[in-house]
Length: 267
Image 1 (cartoon, helix red, strand yellow):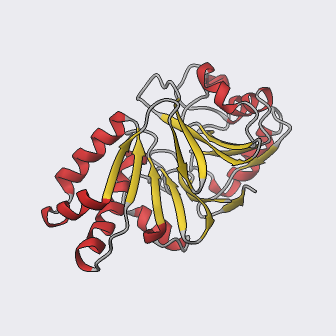
Image 2: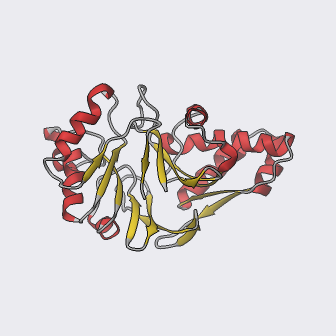
């Protein structure tokens, strides 16, 4: 199992793409998590050598534009394949009720009418609830509400192997209610928007998190490996070094600060 970072930046990043990634075990099936804010997702997939036809499942964590709007472009490309290429493979898109409502509106308003019948037939928008589990990539994937104070946002954990799980907690600070999902994770994918600033101290007063606060949580909750993303894009040349050095002050596990299109082996 590996993760491919299609984007690593925050919502208005211009020097890298918005944070989103794929999980896969082979080249025939990919699970896309979030999709960024525009048709740049198509270029990122192309540059990562990921065939859009091999994306079978998509999860959108919340309705912020830098996570959800890229889905429209994937749907548009797939819908054209349905119309002109005889493509018939189903695409499953998961999200909480607010996500599914927003996606239906976006698709209904923006997708050309000639695509709609085929899109509605083959593209399945599926609402997931707190604690609901679905098999993706032949593994149990369980969704949960991260209790965001801003917008309804879900994360998930996937069982990679016995007693090894990959946990994704969205793009906010880890809430007390979320720690039970983080605990003992083999891998944690987490927000590290800021390296460290006095007014963001430990990330407790703000939606987004800092490297230090996220890594304190990892140390406390016995996380083995952490992937820090959804970051600032003002110093990409030094980001990996800076964030890693800060992380090591708070956390004894392995720290990954990936660049766009970087891959990491999870197993």
